[in-house]
Length: 110
Image 1 (cartoon, rainbow, N blue to C red):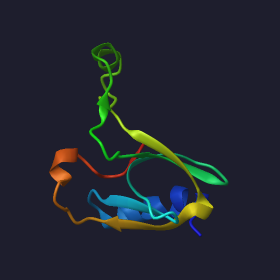
Image 2: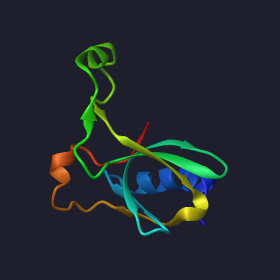
Image 3: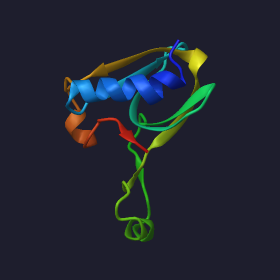
Image 4: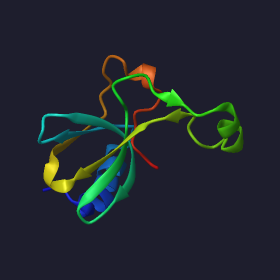
């Protein structure tokens, strides 16, 4: 089972070894899958991830963007997933159709 140790220790090593921006897809036991933008927090029983939604993402207000110029303007979805619900995680450096529409898919620290 994937756990906190995976998200905080193993995953960063995998990303370093893969060298280039990669896509992390987390597959859930319910059949859902999430393309991950960033790890928000890994806790003992669950992980919080910033993920790409199925619809076009909302944007922060102009005032917020001006006050936070180093932050992403796009507001991405967040999911909280118990480790027991994660079926697998898939990392790939291959681009697929539509990637260029999402800027950088690569995983980042939130």
